[in-house]
Amino acid sequence: MSAIDNPVLVSVVIPSFNSSDTLEKAINSALAQSISGLECIVVDDCSTDSTREVVERISLLDKRVRYLCLPSNSGSPAAPRNKGVESAKGRYIAWVRRFQSAGGANRFFSASK
Image (cartoon, rainbow, N blue to C red):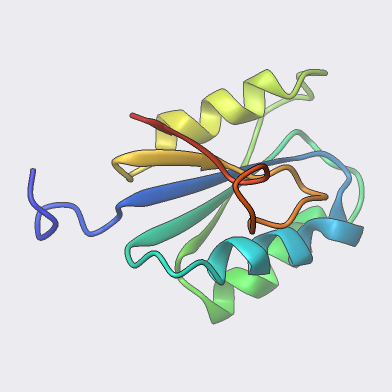
């Protein structure tokens, strides 16, 4: 598959639960990477705070940001990560925990899809 067929090279998945206080920083950190062809997928595990509003506000300004919400709280970080991988369009997957920035080798993990 060529870059023309799939312009998204890296899908950054951010699992989230009640993380509105740190989520914007995590999203902006992911978007600031020098990789062209990047998408950022925030997967909400049924937060009760303003997580949805934070992501929707950012996604209006940057179309690389997508919001997904699980139908019910999974109680585990695995379900949001898996949902993010399922919906990813990129050739590679990267995870950023909501309280981390994406800079530095020890904070930006990736695996081939």
